[in-house]
Image (cartoon, rainbow, N blue to C red; front, top):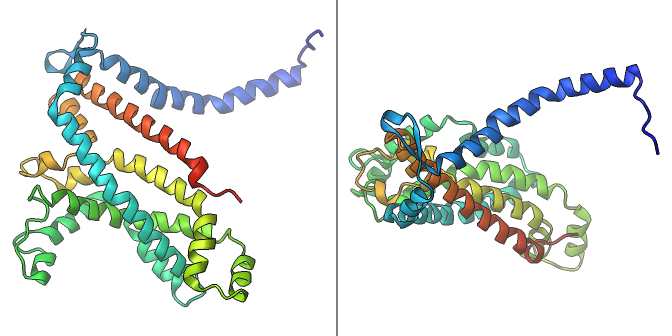
Length: 296
């Protein structure tokens, strides 16, 4: 079948079409593709003196990163943070969403209050929580009449940071849950009430199964967010903090090597290792979706 020649009008429309998508294509290349390719390239190189010039070293950076104890410690710190933020952030947000989805007075005000942490500047959040956690004059120690080093004791500092993470994401998770709850037909609850099902029974037999796609989406996105956490730890934990080694995330470690120490090749290798780890976690979760998510 011979190709039909494009008319002048069709050619003009095609040119305008390419012109409209050109900014998006340039943005993808500059902001996505080029950084990825450059990061992979940097991971096989050793950064020259004063951060200039690259010398190809093969897999030397990967060998150094994977054999360094601080890499695995930072990855462990990140996983511990995720274990606190993701489950507690999801469960608390779900409970709040169920209550705020009821036809009660003032629910819109409470929704706004719980969502405020998401729109607050990270610097302001860090400043407030550092004051709350302060060992000498912090609010928590004054209320509890204790002298706990909340963010400088290596044994509990990671828990304290996790609490801030939970507080920060509850509002966002809650909004997503409320959106999912509003998609569940009310007829299911009415039929369950007629059959004598209690609120708890309705929650576990109707709400939880039908909300599982939303729950899975939130868990997956928050898990990726927790594994790439940086700004929270960077602003709360000072470089002189004795608990930094037991708290710093793997992205924090990347920042230290790539920007503070100027070793971009080593830092790029840390990023590649993290990306591979996230891809493995994502693959496992995608496989688990078939058995964990209820599709109506």
